[in-house]
Length: 64
Image (cartoon, rainbow, N blue to C red; front, side, top):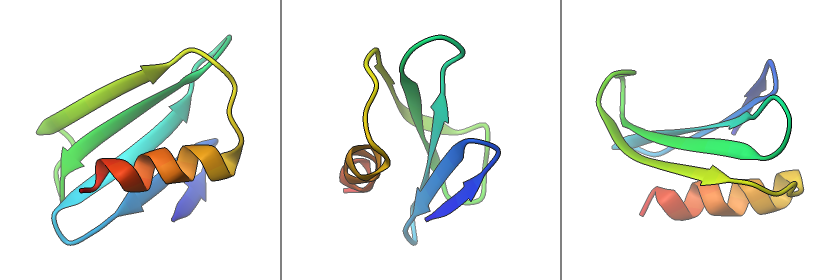
């Protein structure tokens, strides 16, 4: 897990997942093929505030 500019990143050998905070409320999670930023595999919008631990669990769940 890496944190940079309000962005959480988790990854495995196949995918990268980025969690970014929306301007007003909620988060966006985007799953990409490893090493690319254009091959998006999955996107989830969350419209509620969650803790970093909850976001991390969701992000790691997307890696499966």
